Amino acid sequence: MADAEQIASAFIAACADELAAPKPGNVHIYAPGHGMEAADFIASAKAAAPHISAPGARVGARISEAVEATWTRVGCNTNLGIILLCAPLAHAASRAGEGSLDEKLARTLEALDFSDADLAFRAIVRASPAGLGAAPQHDVAAPARVSLREAMALAADRDLVARQYANGFSEIFGMGREAIRRARERGHDRETTTLLLFMTYARHFPDTHIQRKFGEKVARETLTRFQEAASLIDAVDDRDSMFRIALELDRSLKKSGYNPGACADLTVAALFVDYLLAILPNVHKNG
Image 1 (cartoon, rainbow, N blue to C red):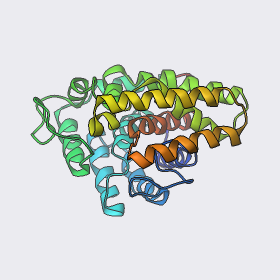
Image 2 (cartoon, rainbow, N blue to C red):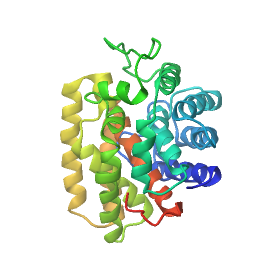
Image 3 (cartoon, rainbow, N blue to C red):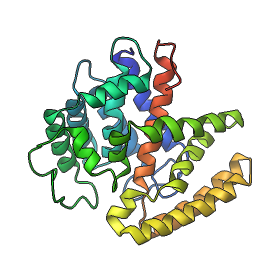
Image 4 (cartoon, rainbow, N blue to C red):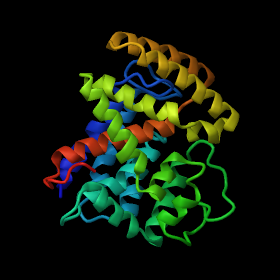
């Protein structure tokens, strides 16, 4: 198991890494976007970290306290999806006993209950994510009547973050870990590795943040644009060319107000897992 200070440091590092790459349509150090700047996200990460890593805290409490701390610090929703993904990962990393991180995560997800759901629902309402709307059943504005994992499973077909709760974070431990491995094998630096990780998600999934806000047609069209840009990036091997291609798409997406936030959330979670695997003492680190 990792201690709270290690987990908090890993969380902040993952958030900083995500901002250091020119992820098209998202906020990063090369360009602001959607009324926010990279400094807002760094401040959010530092505010949320002690609550994400709180010793002995249930997942719902980690989520609730981290969202509240973020709002106190920056006054807007910068990191709800990141918190929803990283809270159970942090809980898993802090579990004592044998097992790999993904095995401990499975036990964490199985143990989620009504109280976790209720606290998470309140946090989601507090954050007021774009395109939240209302659900026909188990609406987050109402008291929880199912466990957090069950609630997330019901939203899995329309939300990439919720889908991870339903499938055991398979896109994080599978696709994400593999993208990081491939980038490192090619000798890419941390920032380029992060860009390639993000593009892996963005070329495979219509971003559900865009879909909620602008509709399925726009999400599908944006997916096609990401696939075209990813193919161009695949054809080059130097950082400058990759970043130039990414920044061209970045300017175009931001002009339309399109923010692939769900893919960015998955990127942070995969980076967080990578840091956690480096600090966990368990020898079974393959996730």
